[in-house]
Length: 384
Ligand SMILES: *Cc1c(COP(=O)(O)O)cnc(C)c1O
Image (cartoon, rainbow, N blue to C red; front, side, top):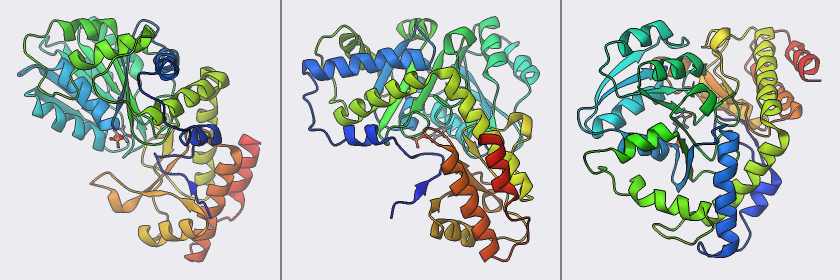
């Protein structure tokens, strides 16, 4: 029996997305596929809300999308400020180090976001070329507000890179209006396509900085010099080749982006927000607290502490037995004290309820005392 996949990616995918994956593979230079690819690039700019941006679709994971921003925009000794709210902020610093960036990490305590005033204190020194931040860090479920960061980027002429692997198409993002230079993600999270695609939209300013580089890009596969002509060709309906695209995944992406735009971005943002709010309140009704402060809690996933003396591995196994797959902790300092539940993409009230029920059943099996049924009532009230 299929178990409900409630981890922070991969997630549950729509039947239409899944069945498109099993269509016979098209030639990557056929007219049919050129249209599918070109339309997908176009739809990405709508989902990202960046009409003047340059979209990239590559075979790879979210880490490749992070790598593409690093490889193409950073030259040796460039100063980069890494705003870290957890595991993926640390990964960005490690990645930038490979390209010789002179980086500094601004760290938030687990569960907290970074104060924009602190970011401004750094940027005011005038030495930074770029800033990276994680919109939703999947290790802490902390959501960073991109609006003040976009404003600071413009004020101090610093490129802003938003790691949106756990946020794009779930959390509100208005790339162009907010002045964010790079918004990147992967297919398997809120975008709703099986793993295997790295997705990125770059602002005109980011492309200009790329074109004005003095040194060659130190990564052959990620180099936009190789990929930009390919994206341009697909946009213009011409065949082109650098590396064979992941044809079936791109077809699935086309379907998913159409479904996302059919739902409407505002409706989708609100649905994620309501689901997350209900889930948080339901957990509280069971006496379960979360890592992030409520004011910065993500809408795409939750990071609840294990209640009482519940042991992580036993609990996750019981939830699995009850038909729902959830994830363990990821933040190195807190790893064994919390679990993670993804609630993004096509998630319905029924999925949320099934997850709450599985958590309740597991806590009962493990002899934890709590008000059974209270959480389910919250879901019924808030999502009913
Ligand atoms: C999942 C994730 C990544 C890494 O994506 P992969 O596809 O696993 O390489 C990076 N950043 C964030 C915020 C993520 O949630």
